[in-house]
Length: 130
Image (tube, rainbow, N blue to C red; front, top):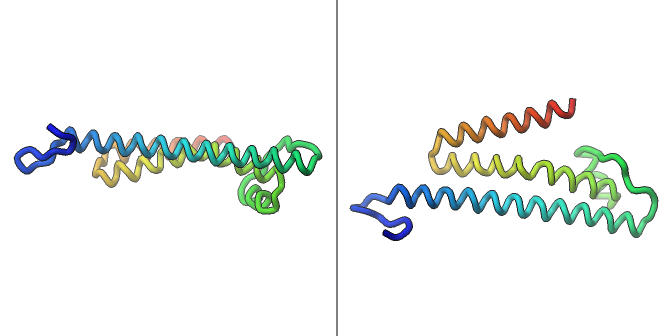
């Protein structure tokens, strides 16, 4: 029967599952695509600004909020730092979005599992900074 079709007045559970999987796949695709595109644009912007201003290429990065302030002042280090920050955070956004989709679908098991994955990722990020 057709995708999402009702059988005896009850929605086909396979179709519901297919729809949920497609939503999650679509979210993952868009978050990764836009995160990568934004990161690449910021990094390219930093190269362009550096090329016009000259000087040394930055060899370190700044962390937010300093990187955002540098970006607002059109400093190459602000573009590079923010671009790398976006690139690192993109997988976090994907996992957080998956949590929302699982919760909206009422899937407590996958919501919990994905929340644990996000906590482990955040712990890894924080412990890596110490």
